[in-house]
Image (cartoon, rainbow, N blue to C red; front, side):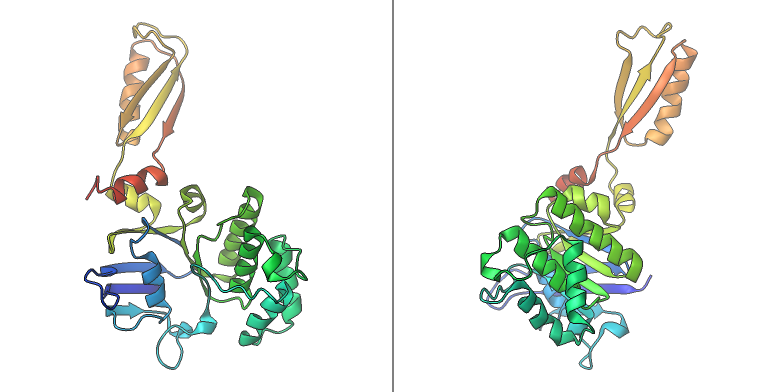
Length: 296
């Protein structure tokens, strides 16, 4: 699938000995919701800055879909929306004035109506309040709206749920999914809220110490770095098994292969198997093991 590809991309900030990125080979499929993961200082923000054309002097190749490029061959500012690190807040402007100011860069038809629609989607009601008077969570909603105003094909979000309450966080993620499904918008999202990423993202990339250590779907990465799953078998009649509990628990790397054998043994010994539950280790488990170097 076409999309963004980094090929052996390296970058070092001027005056620093160590690379911020080292030989990164990363593919972001078009129309994916891509999670960029890694500890602080791993190189995530640097990677996004390279993508946006904000850092010159990197080595390697960066491939971007042709319709997203400007005449200089770099990512066109009109092709993406962005929320990276600390966005500027023009405190004297109202929310509406702030969004109109940025919206006019994109020649958006019926800009006020567009702002109204997006504001309603994230429950942003304070359009006439000064930016300086907003809570951190409300400011975050404003920045989400700003990033999506011009319906860009690519959106880069750094901690999009930062400072949001659980309901507001759900509203933002619902909007991300809606744009992805309805418009084919590609999202690259950096976040440490792993439960959100596991639930909503289609692809993932793990950075550690400036290097990419895994890239693909969650299932593909799990297959590459298998982990133990906890299996619980609930039993009715214990028959001649000699068990003292009505539950049998064990850990295994391949439940699909191991469970039938175990169940057959239990049934042959007269046990009545009621239920089998498999608790696979999630993204949080995988993240910790990858970034701590347990696999590689």
